[in-house]
Image: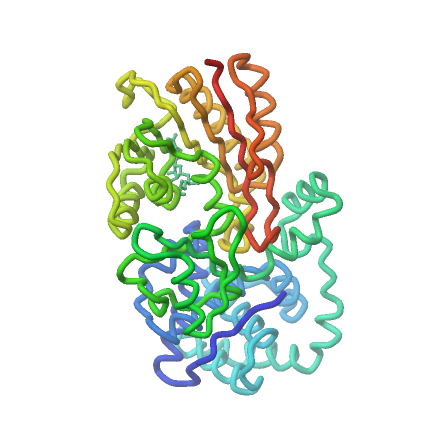
Length: 432
Ligand SMILES: C[S@@+](CC[C@H](N)C(=O)[O-])C[C@H]1O[C@@H](n2cnc3c(N)ncnc32)[C@H](O)[C@@H]1O
């Protein structure tokens, strides 16, 4: 599992201790059910310390399951409930030993010293012994780490293997690798070719795509604040696959458009940038809806926002038909595991059924809001057929007034394909 380590790193300084403590805290947050993004939010680290902490946390989550197998071999006992912080300490330390560039002795010393910071000095000898044994036997231990499920929970590996017998190894490899940095240039503020030039002047070589001049891909992540014009809203971070939505829906002058599941607003902002001026954005979560406003304001856009369950049209719809609807439906997120490595730990098999039921509710609720001749773009960042192709086939069978429009950017995209996230798009047209 390839990881790119941030250049700078603190050793056994106070800042280093705070950074490692924060990393343990974020993993505890994820363990208690938070998303990694939510667990990272309150962390006050900045600069190199933050970059190193994120590298440790995201990398550890990406290979969490195999590392637990490794830790179990080394420990031969389970941690007590109150010692989960030590489990995370050990996982982070093993990750750093496996993928970091600092000398092994420094890594071991720093993580062993964290037992004091966690007020568990009794664990000092144990952590020290386990890490040193790993270093002595790493060749054999790493070699024995044959992971049939390639770092995925067994249920998910089985589903992906069944759905994509040929592509499963490539999907798993993509899920286990840190993603590149995709940017969307705000064409209302800066010309994309000029922006590419500005990136090149900073030594950043961006790749483009044929279907959008605004989509640029940098091979590895950089602190966004260092990007040209970041503060002035010249670019937004948005995966290439996510950028396809607005291009498929193609907003036309004067059209009434609904973004039904809008938060945090990446696609809303893109629709606005492509000329959607009569745009309504809904989201069930009032809290997340605030981020849509912030995202839009950063780009200089405006939109009508409403917190509502989009499927319950009696609570929010004024009866005026929409010309186009984007339904970026809640889903299992199985196409964006490389970006949100906590998904593989948090997601359970039952979540698939919950997502499918929600998607049906939303499709059924929103279809009547579309004008005759209008179009609805159904999107998920999932790779599971039951949320995607099977969902749409069933919808078309239930709705004789719907037909699927062939657009070159629609269909199932797999994680890592063209360096993008896994996404699914179906463009449905209503009979005129
Ligand atoms: C995949 S995210 C949308 C991402 C967003 N379109 C973007 O590009 O930034 C799905 C969103 O659907 C919202 N959601 C879930 N169920 C909903 C419902 N019944 N009605 C409206 N929004 C819902 C969630 O709060 C979440 O923000």
